[in-house]
Length: 178
Image (tube, rainbow, N blue to C red; front, side, top):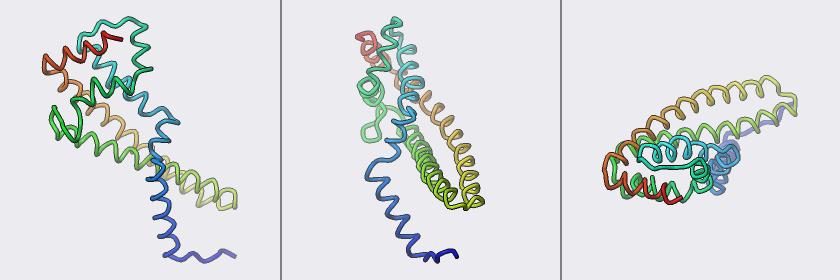
């Protein structure tokens, strides 16, 4: 016989789960585990910045970009693309941040829904587990859309950073110094 679940207990569980996810920065942990931010930063921000800035990088230097991703993002991208002190169009930055927020919401939801589906499957609640996995597939499609949008925003931001000759020279110098 199924046990009764009160709406209040579901609400409390949802709030507790959200607080824990926020406290441990779940989306950062998932991104690190899956290499999401690493892949995006290197392929859609740093490599395009290096190439379009006119930097002359050897193969070894291109490989070093991946190793120095965090520091290079700070010196070549976030120095100009910041929500607190933007040098480029702030609307583009806001759009990109909003888009990424939705991407992370979908990723966290998939993580929670998958764990819940596994628990339900263990207890033999196959229809409910299958429904949650279908919801995960829908969220994956949404994530794909947000990921494609993120690439578009990154392309625009890279172009805006390099539009100014002084910034372009500074970015090229960072990459040439590798």
